[in-house]
Length: 163
Image (cartoon, rainbow, N blue to C red; front, side, top):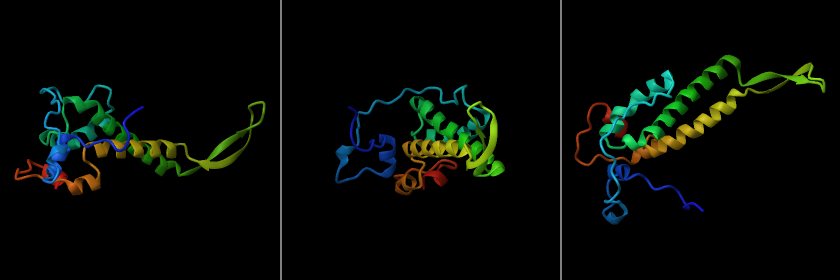
């Protein structure tokens, strides 16, 4: 049986939020730290997902939120964002309600019925993944609203992301 409750926030995000002076022990000061490694988009990412990768990766690396150990999780987020965009484009072109063929017992088309566009399922699934992974990297509005940068100047565009 797995652990119950919500997953704890990564230490890097807790430190960006500001250590709670009433509960300083809640920050794991002995958390394993990844060694410096290659933080590049995996080869399996689509071209669109790689474009998404480059939008925030540098800022996340600068803040210590994206490390070599997090590449696959961040890549999954980028892939979900790209998939969501593709589904939204298809829905805009085809509409939310489409005609589906109706078949008889011999497999012949006997008519059509209106139903949900299958791209809605893709969009819903991608939305859920985007939100789930975004929270892990502090990319949701509620996470961003809680971030504090203790005395450090935000490099480049990270101030926009983390303020």
